[in-house]
Length: 74
Image (tube, rainbow, N blue to C red; front, side):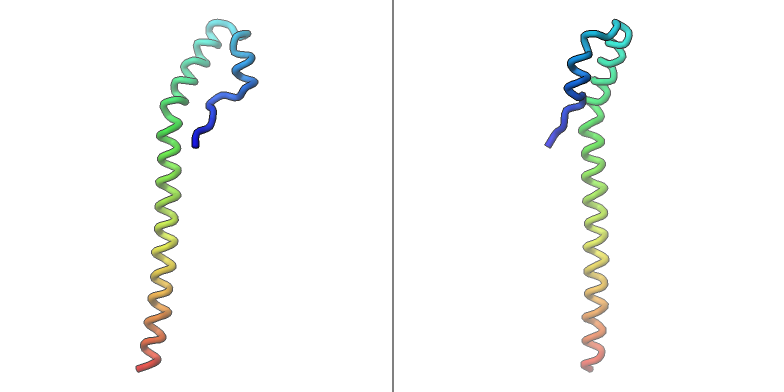
């Protein structure tokens, strides 16, 4: 899922800006266009790593709990 890099309001008022501001806006748009996928991937990977860590922690706790049950049976 992708989101627009500029709001509709900014698009409507883009033509009213002076040439230097318009040039800056174009550079900002290009930078945002290039960085958006990289930032999105970073966020997804970070979330995935955190989810993996949570799963690993839960499995370790479960293993500890089950190993205690095995020790009490013997």
